[in-house]
Every structure is written in structure tokens, then in C-alpha cells.
Length: 166
Image (cartoon, rainbow, N blue to C red; front, side, top):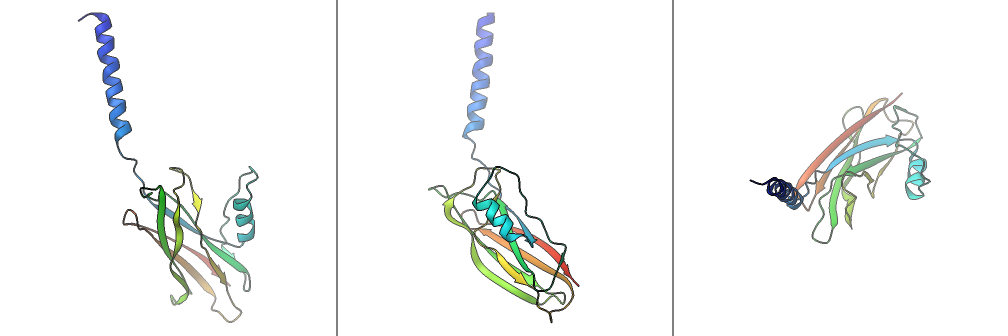
């Protein structure tokens, strides 16, 4: 086989393999992370008015009574529908140290009828849970659990975190 023909066949093989990979559907895998932070205002301000400076959702380890806490959910990988929009709902539940329900928000919007974030990008959910530990509430470890359901793909994602009150 002539040299130029071998190159042509090799290039054609690479092009066909590249085309086959490009035609494979993009896999979306919903993942979530719940963070309880005492700096919710700072987080929401940075998210709503980006300055180009990095920021993070700083988790609270030990919470003070009477302090406003925000249980926020970060997510990525929701499956877009034919219009390119995600349809994800979530249940947020807080538990006290005796494992009793302290607060719950069932079937609230995580990200619905909104364009899917860029593949691999993390997005802040539309809803969050506000938590205030009152003076007579028990001391100990409080848990916050989130179950998210991607209604377009039928998949679920779970995340849980905890903080302590003395």
C-alpha cells in the first residue's frame, strides 16, 4: 500500500473514531452537597454579585443558640429536558440530637424550568433552609439531610451534614 494511502486510511480511522465519540450522549449524573453555614448572607451576596474573587460556603462546626444558619445545597449534573431545562426537586430535613424532626421542607425546588448548568459546573440551588437553635432546644449534634430527585432522569442524590450546639 502506498505511503500516502496509509496516511489517508489512518486519518480516516481517527476521524471516524472521533465522530463516534462525539455522537455518544453526554452523561449527566446528579450530585449534591448540603452545607450548613453561618455566613449565608455573605454566600448569597457573592453568588448574586460575582466579583471574580473566589468564595466558598464555609460550614459551621459549632453553632451558637439564636444564630441564623443557612442549610444550602450545591449541585451539578442535572439532566436537561428537550428544551435544555432541568427539573429537580428536593426534601430538606433537619434532625435534633434525639433524632426527631426539627424542621422539614418537602418537595421544594432545587432547580426547575431553568437551563442546566454547564456540564461539571457547580450551581447553588434555588431554595435553602433557615435554622435557628432556640435557647431551650437540646444540646448535641444536629443533622441536616437532603434528598434530591431529578425528575427528567428519574435519579436521586443524597447528602447529609451535621453541626454541634453546646
